[in-house]
Image (cartoon, rainbow, N blue to C red; front, top):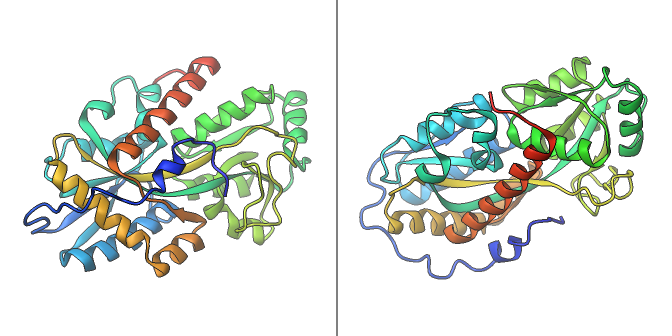
Length: 319
């Protein structure tokens, strides 16, 4: 799987220097907050990791879903928690872009949260309602330009919305974003024809692609995905140069002791090396990818800068 982020190579380095353990941590249950609705690939992957961490730590690790408001409900809940390592946020690209969509999210993601480790990466697929008369990215752009009021995009968070805005900008067309509380809801809207196009995670869209319920136009990468080899790459579909993937990882409230952060990162890295865990994540369309806290922080900064620039160019306004 090809990725555009230059920090990926660093993210795959051995977890040197993360062997220090925080004395006594954890000595009570740990909660992982997922700012998305249940059922998506990130939720499923988190539950796999929670089970493994629970076994390793010999303490319960609970997954708590808090979706909505571009991820700010869950992220804000985690940011306001005690800085002791017992509340972990599953963070995606949305964590660095919340202020683009909400004027007053109630917390500052830069000041109130700190990175722990990258967990996984995956591909996006551009899919359309099967009744839409287009078969590739070029035809979609041409259709949208010819029918400016007939193409709506089903977004399920800031990440998918910003990526689609960048795509439509690069292909010189406009489409209305319709935001849903979760990816499953957005996919249902696509199949029902309430929206005509969706930038979906390959992991979530694959069953509907295989069942013929939506039409895939492209994997947004230089090469085809081994998970869905029948779907063309962006280059093959008329979208050369438009590559974007998604990722998620763990963050904790700022002020959490470094020893605790490093222990969570090291223990997560150990779990991500297990064959059964890697296979489980792969079945979800994900590639297990660990990192140090500093490496994950650089990735968040890189992505946030990219999407902030996209928002400014396309005129997205905070609510």
